[in-house]
Length: 145
Image 1 (cartoon, one colour):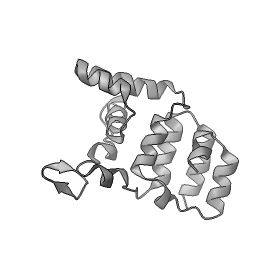
Image 2: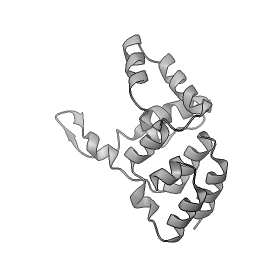
Image 3: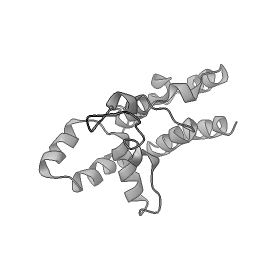
Image 4: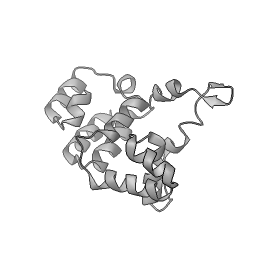
């Protein structure tokens, strides 16, 4: 499914969904991060997310940001900022949702394996941000049922 989404293969996405792929089990936080961070996706909006984040970071953090992939927290902050802070992305609080905190640190593995209650909504937003409008229509239809 990841390859079909990244490659914008509507026929394969439809085929997998029609044959019972459980999107709630498939879409984890780490997979959604991988979709947003895919080097094969060229989107001015994704680039602007990096730019928005770079403006809020110290010089050390800017360099780290350029070397790493986007986290869902980063995406959430950027989306909220781009929408004038009238929308608060649930991705911003992903760390806070973690139930296991050991010695004051968050269990990254738990966060990365988190699933979403409405995975089609999250993929729909990703498809629009990455200018995959036809894929967005497919996800919209499947998400309604």
